[in-house]
Length: 259
Image (cartoon, rainbow, N blue to C red):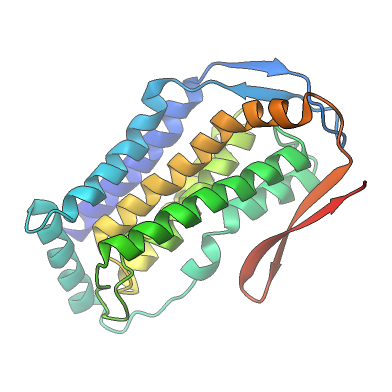
């Protein structure tokens, strides 16, 4: 049973990566100083939202009461706890940030990202804000008890949403270099979700819904950011630097602007 769930989950994540490869794009010049790279107009087809929509819908159905998806939550959790009662591997606390770190690391190594450091940092921060507000609000509304009984903030999985948000971020910035960057990011995100199950912190539907919200937040950000940027800066250059930071287990950003 558990193997079937994991195969299904990995398949959907892989399909999300593959389906986004066919998105047509056009190039436009950037108005922000920092690099000569050009901005890509993100014009996804409606099909690009199928996978996150299916993920979210799957999770929402589980909130409707006693149904096949909710029963699968219980049986999967019972099987995991029976086979691994003392499992405690907290790598998921760090894996959720790994794809985002990879974006900046690869860029420093000379594998150039699609957008400038300013643009991609703003988009990462925007995606983080979207998924944090959305997932946080749903946690309060759904009031679902975690399988370990720690609290009633189980649905959807915040760790998984951040992992898939950063995986989609890596995918958007490096998919034109190689599909393996996208696959690597989604494998890490999937691993984060699986660890949440094994650590008894979430139900399967929490993890699947979290993945959907994470992917969707980044897709929406990449869709709307070019329009917001043109409205705010009107293609004028901006002396600004945004850089990621990680300290004491928390991810953040440093913003420096010259007035």
